[in-house]
Length: 376
Image (cartoon, rainbow, N blue to C red; front, side, top):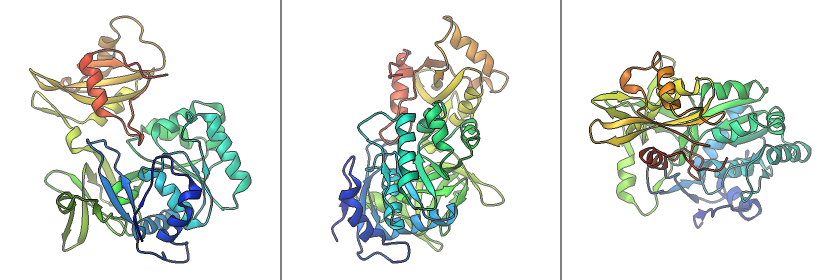
């Protein structure tokens, strides 16, 4: 079977039969030994093309159904040429259900999402109502009356793509919807660790030297298309089996629950001190009036890097010294070297097409020291 390459906005009707052949039905195995080619998000540079065999997508889909309590009907709210959107299609094919698709050419709004959930409720006989979102989408829904109500009609939301603010998760779970924070990437068929716990069959280990996360199990990709050297470097074998070596750092607690600390190259080294961006982001978003924040290292001739923060505020910054006042508000919770030296107000956190934060653009904005002009 020829590899299936999903173009941007690939419609369900065009890929349904091909995906059904690849992943099979819930009771029946695949009928062809094929694969889907999907692009990585590009969060670390140029996107790479990953070859995901149907067996890996099937293993991921069956494990997800086991954790969620069954197969279901899905609202598709993510682009299908990235792994999270592809997985909604693959899980739908596995379940024998038809997803309700939001128009990818129109803005994501609470009203549009609510309409999709209504169509899912009235048209699907699946026992569970499900969707997959990124944190920015979830925040928009919680801030919209129709979107907030629609979340409460779902049985579960898989939330991935980037780190999620604990307050965001708490607000979402208050709607009555089960929100599952997922961790994974294209190379692992998308999310393979749910709320810190590996899916059935998935293995997780952390390198004791550099805290780099390794992932293993039946959900792994074959490798990178037309790049055997990179495949050999990132997909490794040892006595325990086959592993994908991620670009992320983490820790495992005594119960085997994974905590992701951030990307290996996200650590900010300023004047010889190491700063974890997520720690600073957590303190920033806990401040009154701060809706969202993205912390990155900004090149600096004296310090090597300085801590920079894009800050989304509930209102326009008041006064010319608002950055200084924000630093003072952070001082009781952060050591001096972790205090942001560059702070820029933004209407929104810049995102890649996959929904992950665009850190390269954030660095550019902070180096320019200007207010971002992203649409509200």
